[in-house]
Amino acid sequence: MKLIKRRLIVALYVTFMMIITLTTIFYVFQWDITSGETFFYRGEKFIYNFMVYILEPLIVMAYLYFVYVTTASLRFYLKYKEFGANCYYFHRDILYIHSKFLPIPIEKIEYMKIVRHVYRIEYFVISIKIKNKMLKHKFRLGIGGFIRGDNSVLLKKLIDDLNKRDIPYVMK
Image (cartoon, rainbow, N blue to C red; front, side, top):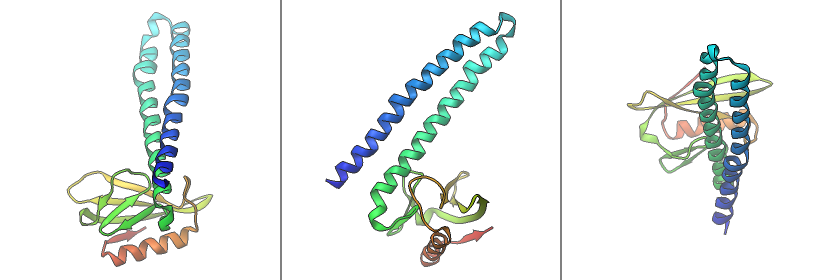
């Protein structure tokens, strides 16, 4: 029953984000196209083409990425909150993070870099370097989203988990 309830909540969230808000954005884009045709003359097609063919697809991609990250975070919260997971969860030799759907095997982790930031509150950005990959996976410890808690306690728990699993980390 809990599994069905979790999946229903995530499905309703994705449906709301994709159907309701995406149609609103679509109508705003239509207004942009109409206003662009009205305000820009034929001689200023460069600005109009930049707005329609470059800027608007970038906005749509950013919106889809936002939906992906928030959906993954909501799914993580609903799935692992009974295990006491905050932003990450180790299960055997697999790491689950709140901003990504797929897990990360521990043996593929080269190192983790923990960077401290202060903006209104103290929070930490954790970068996970994967072996033989150029890109890093990042997640934030203790800011925003559905996960709340004392950041110093979360950091201490993360460092204890990393030491227990012999994962190298760098603190900055």
